[in-house]
Image (cartoon, rainbow, N blue to C red; front, side, top):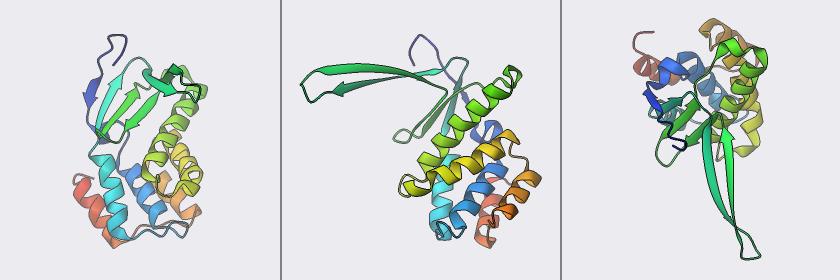
Length: 174
């Protein structure tokens, strides 16, 4: 991490990846748009649950070294609220501060939902925007299970017995 900022390791589902979010993603993957079989759905979501989440008070700084066609190298630095490093199974996030108001919440929800959707649907990029919008809305509703269930029903999404079993094993207390 740059600027001497050390992230704090946190437990994934205690911060963002709770049962409501996992249920929503499973329902989307099982839905008519993607119609993914249960084993692939569970594997995709298990990748989320296996992440090490690193939270920091400051934005995440990412640097890229780009080789231009002219032969020159260009160093680009970007600041992001959230980043998913799939190779190392690490999820970096700026600590959310809900006291900053609605604009900040929707900005954070947008960044979060885009990163999650891109990570889950990297093989089905045509559907990233649709999943992003669902996750963003559910995020704003704090992934409340009743709200997620209604959202899924309104979008004609459901989970199946295999998904219920997966959720029960991933979230045994709830």
